[in-house]
Structure formats: structure tokens, C-alpha cells
Length: 471
Image (cartoon, rainbow, N blue to C red):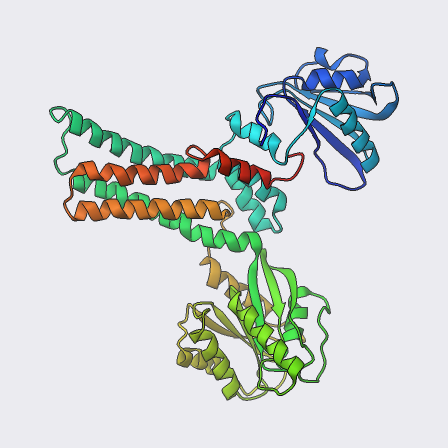
């Protein structure tokens, strides 16, 4: 990414027609370049910071481009820490493109993706975790993901990581001081002292790692495979959760031949629902393909909804399917057995389904059963509570919870945890204190990668290149 302190510009609003569209300029010549295009009651260079003016924009040949509101924001108290001018135009794509082209001809350069946020990072206004939270806010698809992203944007993750790094740095510095000046710094019983610090740090990192898995589900949604025998009501359950007739439902077994993927919200949590073909032994070549795709959906699922027709006895096929899932690569994937059609006369109870789960090897935390009616919607609230219980341990209602949404952050935390584990092993083995510093600094550096304090430039370039234009 280009890093010269030149002036950049970009369209900062979404592509397409709208009432208002914004062209943003940032850099040392932002005000001067905007002044070459803008004409109003006063020049922009004469305005105080955070003031706006109405006027017209014209190109270098004097052709009027649009009527605009120009907002002047002077360094350092701006998004990028540089001088910034935002030109609010009419939101037509042609108008915005012409204003952008005029700004380039007047001396600005087209911004790279993420370059405005990168300048905020380089200017020290935000750290890398907060910069990444900007894109998480933009791409959030549900309230929980948005809340978590906003918390990270406010610095919740930075605060936690900074506290951990300061503790590790202090202990490292103390060891170095004691080795250099043993008369004034004692290492007597240091192993016991540092063990307390290590235990606390590892617990805090473990908590963040648990949040990382929950954060992934918040961000991308819980991939939920709806499986079962033909005509058990899988497509009806899909339609119930979507709130619309998305899948074709008939009394003919085997109607669904392919997987159907849709997103929905269930109590503030996003589910990526995958309706699958009925799983059974069949000679039909097309149906066999559907069964294979159904099992492939199971392999990538975070949650499995096994729909059972409660009006018919449990079969060997149901037991075999559960056993196959349990013994396969997704053996730890939570399973919810949904006893469908509880508005009719049923022959299967929740106790029967729980017994089948237990026989197949599922614990109460891994497998649950409940009654539901795709026809009336009864049981949907219980399903919502079950999903919360399986994935978020009742903590999802805490809007201040700090969730790690970024896979890069999780990797850094895992590296730090491993390094601290090595320090604990050294303490237990009675190794000399000078060996502790190697792994303490490794953990310190790994945590620094989260906030960008120990990040390689090429990785920073890659991260900001994934941002949208104008941000």
C-alpha cells in the first residue's frame, strides 16, 4: 500500500443511486484541493474546524458539477488525524464520479482500499484491533455481531491485551534486572510469584479464546443442517424458521433433492439454515446425490437439527443416522432432535429421543430434544432457548460481552497461551529464571500482533487491502 503523505480521495458512500453521496478527501492538501473546486460565501481555508458551508462545485473549466455541503475537519482531531474535507453531493453515481475525477485533476490521488483507516492507524488514533472492528461494524449482519464490533471499536479488546502485555513485560524486566543486579533485586520464591501471574494471564486468554468461537458464530452465523428421513417435515421446519414458504412442501417423500441454504434470525442470533434431502437407502440416482450432499452439509455444520416425525415410531434409520454423525468427523457437533408434528397424535416422547441420544453417546450438553410443530409454530421459543444454551451458555444476553470476531486475533491468543504454558512448565521443572524470559517475550509479542504493535508491514498491508473503498 502507498504510504506517502499525499492527499487521497474516494467516494465514501455505497455504490448506487441515493439522496446523498459523499466524496472524502484526506491529507495535507485536502482543504486547498477542495477550495479549487468549491465556491461559496467564504473559502474553505478560512473556515474553522468542524464547520460546514453550502456552495457549488465546478471543474477546472468552470463547469458546475453539483450543489454541495462541504464539511471541513482539521488535523489532528479527525478520523485519519489529517485534514479532511467531506463533500456531500446529490447521490447519483454519475455526479459522484465527476466530482471524484475533478478532485483527482485538482491534485488528489485515488485512495487504496482501507487507506483512510490505515492513516488513522498510522496516526495513532486507533490500534489495529479497532481498525479491523471498523470493517466488522460495516459487515455486521445481526444485532449481536454489531454490538460486539462496536465494543471492540471502543477499545475493549485493546484494553485487555494492553493489561496482559504490561504484566508480562514487568515480569520479564524484573528477571533481567535481578540477573544484572542481584543485590537489589531478589529472585527468591520468584517461581511462586510468577505462577500466580501466569495462572491469571492464562485464564484471561482462555476466556478470550472461548469468546473467539462464539464470536465466529455471531459474525458468520451458526451453520445449521436440517436433516432426517424423507417426509419428516424438514422443509416445513425451514419455512417456519424463515417465516415464509421458501421450500416446497408436499406429502410425497423425497420432494427435496438438493440442499437449500438460507439465513434467518432466531432471538438475535443468525442461523445459516441448510435444508437437505431426506436420508434413506435408495436406488434413485438423483436421490442418492441428494443424500450425499445432505451428509456433506452435516460435515460443515455447527449445529444439526435432526427432524423426526413424532407420529411414527423411532426407526433403525434414525439411530443409524445419529450413530454415523457421532462416529464421523463431526462427532462433537451439537444435535437437537426436533419431534415434529406435536399438534397431531404422537407416539414418540422427549424422553424417548433423549434415550436415543444417550445410547448413541451424546451427553446432555451435546444433544437435546424438544417438541415442535411446523404447522402451528409451537415449540419455536423452546428451540431458540436451546440454541442459546448450546452455544452461548446463557451469556449472550450480556451486551457488554467482549467477543473476538477475528481469526487473526484467535491465532495470536493461541500462540500466547502456548508460550505461557511453556513458562509454567519451566517453573515446574525448576529451570533457571533466565529461561522464562524467552517465552514471556514470545507471549508479549504474540499479543502485540492483535493491536498491531508487533506486526509486520506486509501483513498490515494485507489486512487493510481487504477494506472497502472510501474507508
